[in-house]
Amino acid sequence: MKNLIDNLNKVFDSRIRLGIMSVLMVNEKFDFNSLKETLNVTDGNLASHLKALEEKGMIRVNKQFIGRKPNTSYSATSSGIFDFQQHLKALENIIKSQ
Image (tube, rainbow, N blue to C red):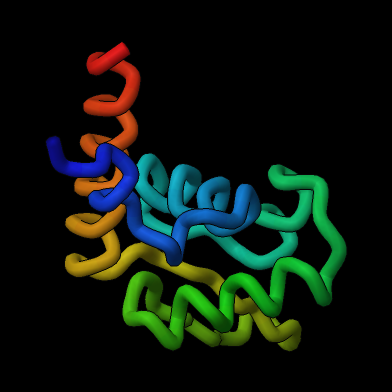
């Protein structure tokens, strides 16, 4: 029998990365401060997890100015959406197997 956890994606092992992707799956884009508030994490902690997801091609970074203030928002990429959905299916399979 195949090990049930083999299909889990290690990128989403962190609860913060799991939270980021969960937010981005139901929102077209989400800005840094809103993510920080929603997930109740520090700037540095959030930034490091966002960078990891960006490096893996899971999210896209969008930088712009709103008035004179810089604004950074994030959105899930097509591959990020697919990989996260596969991760969720693997979790469901673990739950159903019990």
